[in-house]
Length: 119
Image 1 (cartoon, helix red, strand yellow):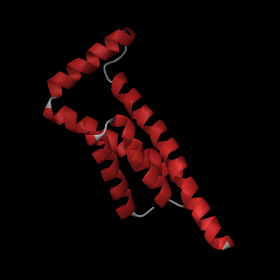
Image 2 (image 1 turned 90 degrees about the vertical axis):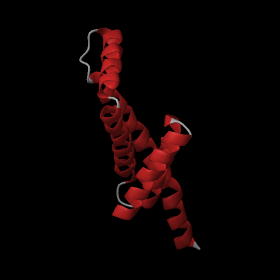
Image 3 (image 1 turned 135 degrees about the vertical axis):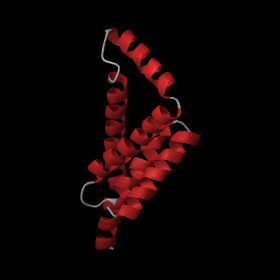
């Protein structure tokens, strides 16, 4: 996948996340999978990892003490887990969602290519 397509996919994921909700950020991973011909699953996973990681980093920059307090509370609810665990779990979910989105995005791309070869 080209750098331009990757940036477009990340921007679409960020815009969908911001305006529609976190569950719609998979649209960016879908685009990454559509644009990527060699490794759509990895491209989708990387797209959401970068976009969600950027959002987490932005939150830490804008409101560091509040975000650290929130992650500490969530970690305590889980059961005396380290405070970084919610961030790691969040990024893991992003990678899983991105992989599924990239895989789903590769399907129309590959079927379109196959249809062009047949027709």
